[in-house]
Amino acid sequence: MRFFGKLVELSAALALFILVIMTIAAVFMRYFVGQPIQWTEEMSGLLMIWVVMLGGVVAERDRAHLTIPFVVDMLPHKIKRIIASLVAVLSIGLLVYMAWLGYRLAEMAQYKVTQILKVSWFWIDVAVPVGTLATAAYTLYWLINDVKQADVGEEKQ
Image (cartoon, rainbow, N blue to C red):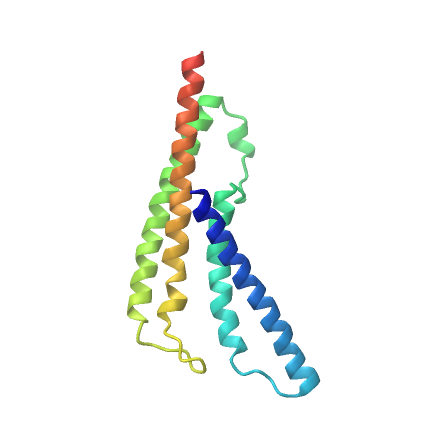
């Protein structure tokens, strides 16, 4: 799981790096040279979708997604664990459903191509199932890890 996490993080960082360099080059070419690069808008859209989806996976890996635990923090420890497990199971279900819908969308768009680059929309849309399935995998990993740690904690008592 560690290698997979580093691979996803590296992919997201590389896509973001390319996006930033490409945007700087596009601005320079447009305003200083007077010759805009035509394909940068399409490419930036493609890269942005991948950066967001892969960034979500990295956030789940690091448990860095935004939460508002105000009400849950006031509950007893056992109820907090039950709620956290329930939220994780529901999240996994929703993520798998989103992956299925995203793949269906990508499949339907596979013969549609972008105007300038002539890239199949499949490669843009497939970012959703890739990102949501990887996020679901990390959510499942953390759920199993938390249940194991809770069981160890109860055995010690």
